[in-house]
Length: 87
Image 1 (cartoon, one colour):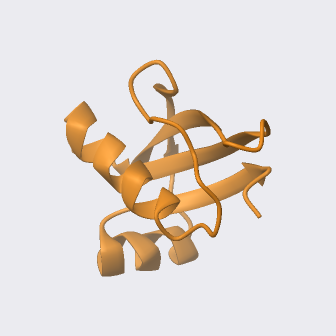
Image 2: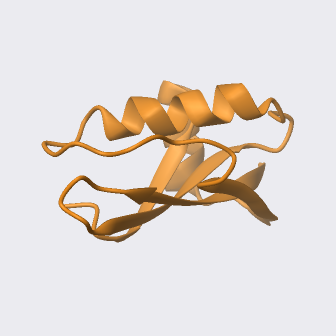
């Protein structure tokens, strides 16, 4: 499966900047849908964050998905790769 990678930076209310990637099937191109996946992920965090918009989330590239990513996408529609300040 080919996936689109959306590079995302979101300001936390404690001043730190979260960096994570939102991975979606290559066919998913609607930005509002992708932002919705990011917002859904942010709701799982125990801390508050600021807005997630096109300013914070941009298409980066397309890559081949691993089995773990495919499984996640099949279960919830997207996959998150946490990079910085996501805990």
